[in-house]
Length: 373
View 1 (tube, one colour):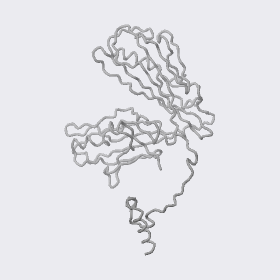
View 2 (cartoon, helix red, strand yellow; view 1 turned 45 degrees about the horizontal axis):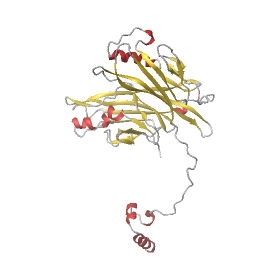
View 3 (cartoon, helix red, strand yellow; view 1 turned 45 degrees about the vertical axis):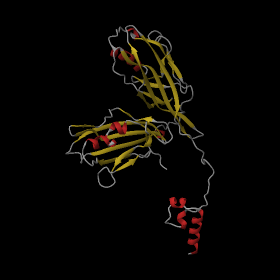
View 4 (tube, rainbow, N blue to C red; view 1 turned 180 degrees about the horizontal axis):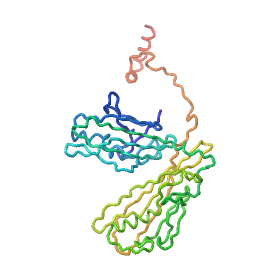
């Protein structure tokens, strides 16, 4: 049975579906996504009546409803579908259905049948009116990349516990480090992050005149800008998938990094950063190697009252998660042969549901009647 792409949200897990056409060009059906099956599907948007409810209730029109989600393969961890572009909701305004998905390209990276990254590469929106709603074509490009096939360097042995990890920061390849416990602006001590070694580190406090530059807190935005500048020095844009292969990079994603606008004297600032590094075993049961598939930086925002010359504690925590699909033996259990014949052999017009409702006496009589007539 093929492995499908599922979407996961607060309502549960269900197959990720895209609109498609069965007869003609209209969007009259849905298309499941089979992992590894690159495809393009297109059809003309279908409206029963062009009105507000048809515009706002069709999830295939809205990037916010269709793509603002987590996706997963069966029995694996959820992966956030990320986008470089805003995923807009449709809006009904002045008899016009705005922000309708016109064309979208989606890339899903897998390790065999396990989804490890998913990204909206491009998206085009359109507006529908009474004149053009029956002619607009929706196009979905779905591209699968199996990263098992990317690295063919046999000298690369993969990561081992305790190996140094390299990252790209400001177009420079550097060891993965975070600030060590102490005064951020005084000690400049660094904690080296090593593979499969969970770490909690950070600065006891970060002065708002960080790096000895003159900085007077004028408002919340000033404080947020200073903290964000501090974070950019430690947040890489990519991370090496393998310890000895510099050209093969995994993407680093950012989660929950949008700060709220200030309310009264309160200021929304992230003082805790959780870094999750996902890795997977590649190869066979007898000969496998560890590969980093991607990393997430998650910022937790706190409401803080800003005052001049104050200091903030900063904490980084790093943990590693194995997302390898559990391997199964060649035979998960001994084969079992069912000697019972199907009901269709005896009486082709009796459904399975009907047979289940029959008692044993009725079934025996039916079998005898069939044999002797």
